[in-house]
Each structure stands twice: as structure tokens, then as C-alpha cells.
Length: 205
Image (cartoon, rainbow, N blue to C red; front, top):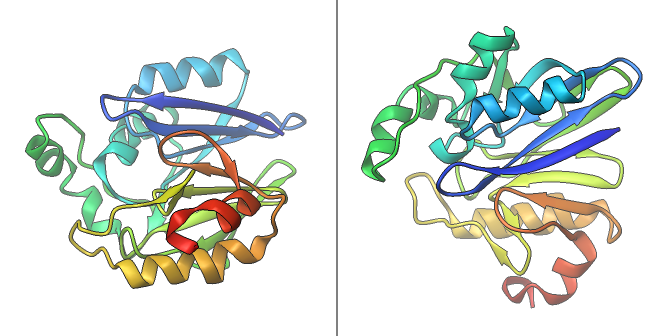
């Protein structure tokens, strides 16, 4: 599998490109900004975008959804719990002095869904807490968690719809059960592992 990560936009949210080497099909997880940069990376790797996947609906993770969809015709998918956020991205970004394009999703992600592109499959895991519709995407040995879990920390829960207790449960009951060797790719900052966070993350010790 092809994996390329890049921190995009002023808030430096992590965007991930996953591609199937045999088919050339790909997904983009959390295209928060810099759509041209993302498109160039897809072109450089000779990948065709099949899906635009959102871990949650905050503007720094989805701000380039509309531009990518216009450029590639790939559908935008998000959990229904966060879908309303996509239609108010310009307003929410403006509060932070930034810009984002409003967008309407093409479909909804549900817990247990399997997203396939080529020979790669991602399982959708509902991990609310940072936001009501937060999800993670799991494929053996890797999980893409958005702002649910960070290296040594967790996502904020003081935004509308956030819930600290729910986030803690999401990590303990939905992520920690995946296995210590699973690599964790968060929405900000460096990658980590389930084992490292189980042992050393101060929010769980």
C-alpha cells in the first residue's frame, strides 16, 4: 500500500493519501487545505482518487473537500453526526480568521462500514468525543484517528458537540483493543502506536 502524509494549512492538520499499488486507486483522508498540493501528490504517484474520507467535520480537516471533489469527481464521505458541519465551513473558518469552502456530503459513513479501493480495505470505527460524528479508519497494523488520539495526548472536547468521557471511552474501547503494534496516524503531530499510548499517554495512566 502507498501511504503519504502531509501537514496542510495554517493549523497544519495531517492529510493522508492511501493508494493501492496494483490498481492505482486511492483515498484521501482529511484534506483540510492546499488542494493543489494534494492533487499534485496524487498525480506524482499516478493515483486515481476514489473517495474523500473525513474523520470529522472541523474545517481544518475538511476545508479542501469541495475543491478535491470538483477536480476529481470523487465522493465526499463523512459520519452523519458531523455532516451538518460541512455546510457551515466558511463561517466556522472565519471565526479563526481563515477560509474554507462549504460542502455537502455525497454519502455517510457508519460504524462497521468497509471502504475498499483496489485491494485495500478500511474499516470505519465510530470514535465520538472530539465531535459527535468522529470516526477512525482501520486497516491491519494502521489506524487513522483524526483528532481522537495524539502522541501523548487526546483531542479537545470543548468545541460544540465534544464530550470528554465519550472520547476516553472511544479510545479505550474502540482503539486500544486493536493491538499494541498498530500504528496510529493522528490528525496533528507525529505518528505513534497503540502500545505507546496505552503505556505512556497521561490521559490513560
